[in-house]
Each structure stands twice: as C-alpha cells, then as structure tokens.
Image 1 (cartoon, helix red, strand yellow):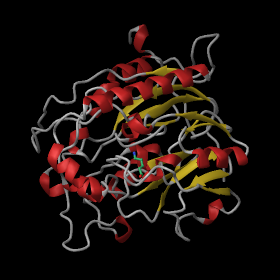
Image 2 (tube, rainbow, N blue to C red):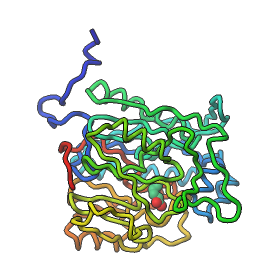
Image 3 (cartoon, rainbow, N blue to C red):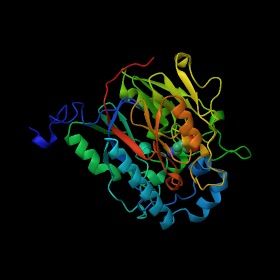
Image 4 (tube, rainbow, N blue to C red):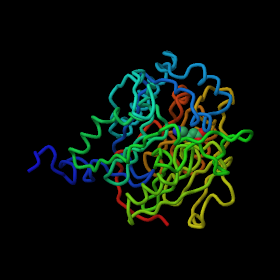
Length: 374
Ligand code: DAV
C-alpha cells in the first residue's frame, strides 16, 4: 500500500476548484494556478553552436566575452522585481502563484558527455515544463547549460504529484559533441532550409516549441526541437492528441510563443514577420487571424536572446484578460480594439533574459477540459 501522501487524488479539496491540481489543455482557459520563474543567479550561456543558430548576431560578442559568468547584478535585481510585480498582479487577478526553488546556477556540472559547464537560470518555466491535461512533462532540452534546469521545479513537481498530477521526464539526451551540427560555411544555420544546429540522433525539444489548443497541439522544428523529439511527444501523448508541425519564416527559430499565440477559441494572434502563405493549415480557415502590430522596442534594446517580437509573448488569464508589456502601446490598443482586456505590466528588464510573460510562466491549472476547437 502506498502511504496516503502518495495515493492519487483526482480532484482538489472541497471548497477549492473541482478540477485536478494540474489541469491545462489550452493557452486561454481560466487560469487558476501558475508558476512564475526566478531571475536569481542567472548565468550567461557559454558560446556554442546552439547559440550561433538562435541568438541575434549583434549579441554574439556578448556571449563570446561573458559566457559562463553571471548576468550583471543590477539586471537580475530589476528582472526579479518585475517578476515579483507580475506575481502580485496575477494574485490580484485571483491566480495562485508558485515560484521555483532558488538554485545557484553558477555551480559547474559535468556529465559523461560534456562539461564542466555552468547552468542558465530558473527564469523560464515555459521552456522546461510542458503541461498537457493532468500531466507535467520535463522537456529534454538541447542546450547543455539547461541539462539540470528541471531541478529548480522539483519541490513543486513533487508536491503536484502528491496531489494527484502525473509527472514525466522525457528521455534525458546525451548531448555529446557529435549530436550537434556545425554551421555550413557561408550561409550559416537556417531552419527554413532545414539546416539546424541539432541532429536527429536522439530526441530533444523545448516545451516552448509546443502550443496547446485542446486536442490539437501545434509545434515547430527549431534549433532546440528536432523531429525525433516531436515524434516522442506525439507518441507519448497518444491518440487523444493531434500534434501538428507548423513552418514559420524564422531561420533562427527557438520557441513558438512569439510567432503563434492562440488567445481564445477561434482567435489566433500571429507574428506577421514570420507568417508565410503555407504556415497555417486549412483547419484555421474559420479562425480569426489577428495580425500583431509592429513592436515599439528599439533594435538596440539588449534582448540578448530574442527578437523584438517579445510583444506577442503574452499570458492569457482567460479568453479576454491578457497580460501584456506596458510599454507596447500598439499591442495594448490592438487587443482592446478586438475586445480583449489587456493588463499592462512592465517587463523590459526581464526581456534581456530571453522572454516575456508566456516564457516566464507555466500554467499549472486552468479550468476546462479536453475539447476540439476545429
Ligand atoms: O524572438 O521568437 C521567443 C521566445 C523565446 N523564449 C523570439 C523569442
């Protein structure tokens, strides 16, 4: 017999929500509980093929020079403050906020295949954890510095398991030297042309390359997600889910959540700079396609890891309320004009760590069950 603390309880205690403790099938069902990342001890990743494939070229020198060290203390203080404000805003909207354990990412680690190397951060739960229904899946991440990143969430994951959630880790990749592909001379990496930094020798994916729309899960091949990883996830999820791979015009693709952002049943926010005539399959013909306005942030803003399009990286609290960057007035106006209720939060410093509200969070529980929206 299992001890009581480990037996499965299907629903939460009386007086609380009646859905399982972990329950999230879409990006927009009413949000009840969320993990918000931490900026503490974040380190700058060391230069590697996966950075060359994904990071903006104007910041390569930053990684080459500073990789392996902590981010500037002032940046981390400001990012941590923004995360605290985000947490307060979410709580004031009725969402329970959980935070990962503080981890000192500057402690080097080693595996049989690589290292010693320092870790990255616990700032982006969206990249690491994929919630589908009542299951939390730890992603098999392609960046070596992220190998032990799920450890920041261990206390939370154990707690959710004890409360009835399913908890899975995808097969841990080896990430040996020969797993990575050297950039072809001249052209460089380009996922549009199938030239990725990662091979197909073992499954890898980041959770943030997947997007949940009920029974349909949309993903992209990127420089951190290969076909083997997509196939692993599709087979793992089984016939109740249909996994679709979309192709964007994003040669340096890493994460789908500044390109393709479903906001409500039948309503999809897209990045016009990355949309091609073939990106959206015919199943979207009846959907309202919302073309995001151009972001206002300047080209020179130190978004070391990303494009300027973090303005799309919003977090939906339900089909109307959306947390958006307070300095992106065109996005706020656009969403209002479409009947949404934007909740502006300042998040530009955090953006230097490589994401905005969607990246910085992982929705653990939303009301609602498994449905088809097509
Ligand atoms: O520019 O597409 C997406 C979010 C990264 N976590 C970009 C960044």
